[in-house]
Amino acid sequence: MKGALKVLNHSLKKTSATILPRTQLKQAIDIVREEWFKVASSRNCAGHLVRNYVNWFTSYSPVLLEFIINMTDAAGNTVLHYAISHGNFDVVSTIIDTGLCNVNLTNDAGYSSIMLVSLAEIKNDAEMKIIKRLFQCGDVNLQAQKHGQTTLMLAVSHGKTEVVKLLLECGADLNMQDEDGSTALMCAAEHGLQEIVNILLSCPECDVLIADNDGSTALSIAMEAGHKEIGIALYAKQHILSRENSPFNLSKTKRSRSANTVMPSTLSYSHLSLKKSQSLQPREYATLSSMLKTRTP
Image (cartoon, rainbow, N blue to C red; front, side, top):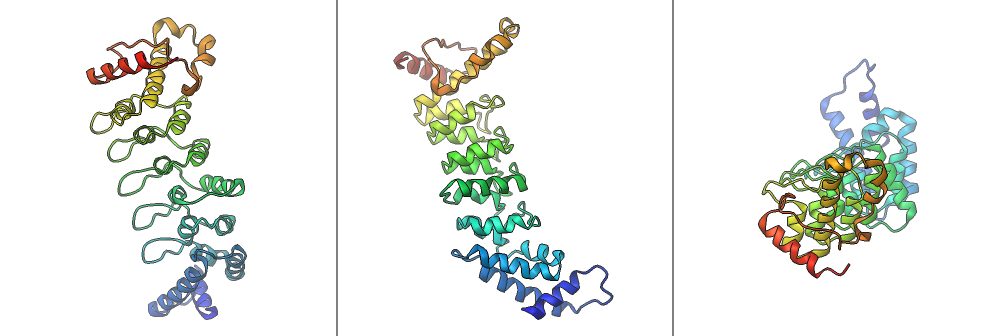
């Protein structure tokens, strides 16, 4: 291993006067990769062990450390991909601390390490703080290469409420669409995730009128899935936006803003009245009319 590190470090020096044979360099890379992944990508790897390796690599040069930290295996995964998927946040923290890890690297399946947070089991606030640092190191709006999903969409699809909150805090764009035109809000509406729907609707920039490639909105998706409470909350948001944008209310924006930004879960729906002109299809109009009639204020 020491010999392989010396060869690799030598090849990374731009001022190197000699060019190493390709076979020798490849052999050195293979040796280092095998050792690094054997140790750092295991499910129960101890953080202090990875720190020892990081210090060892740094003793040669920061350039060598950066090269190894961002090494990928046959599936395109980095050690960070594995650490996150295993929920080994001690190792995640150690790798982030180097300041040299490219967290936006995607594996062969098209996912960055950040996107895998939605698969991890987060046990405490300390791990949430590490995840926040991770999000701040990369692009939280990066889309998966195959289906165009964002980290926010993946977190929503797995019901990770706290991760959703953290992503929004770190600048996640909740109106982005995947290859099917779906948004995070549509996903939450389809799966009946009321709390996440409320969180997304509380964001001023949330656009409830976005339609997917089939022409469906979050509202129509919620109704088709039978999630009445979510459908009512979505309609309430749409109703509020239409009132805010009306000529009569533009002059009263400042006075009414605090009332208009109430979370949908705390709204009284008894004041709502349906108008067919409010971007509703006939089926949507009929269904929501029935909802509002049977809804207890």
